[in-house]
Image (cartoon, rainbow, N blue to C red):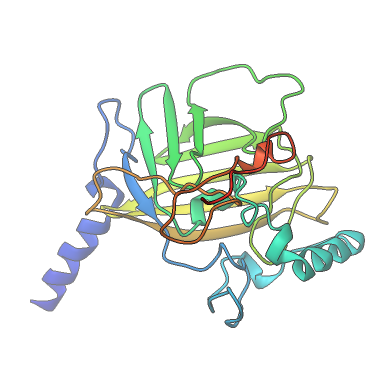
Length: 256
């Protein structure tokens, strides 16, 4: 009896049990969210001010920094409360958007996969058919191209700027970042997410993170986690300009 139940449970978790699209690929459509603390620190860490304790997601437990880059990482850590781009209300970039403490939505068609995050209107367009890259392209989320390897969506991205961090403790990259992500729907409510990070300016060799991402079954849509540095006290109307426009617009009006 027990063996029969175990067999049924294993069958339910098998790749063949996941929903599929009309073209036979696993259907990644839905609203998803991690249940980890990688946004604050990719490695094992204890709790601290604004950092919840958590288990690391880096394979091998080490990020292979070059010595000169490690010095920059320490500087980032010392100034993290103001220097972290997310603390400035900026786009988190990738892979960090995947493991922010906010849900994201995946929309899938035969030709494209789109990721929509609650965080500051972030969206990412990933063609899954041959599509030329843009020469000299540079952005906060890179220039992604996707393809299927069996039941896994593989996304390869280049064309990043150097403005985003991997987490709140200051792990960072340069504009030479190459990101290879793998999305595999391993259960009805789970995507196994893997990301290989290559950046010869910052790291001595490629390194990898891995984590499960879970479906948010009770949500019909993602909401908006808007962020303004010039927000007034909680409960009052938000005033001022977006961080990208700071220094170019007039100061917010005073409370009457």
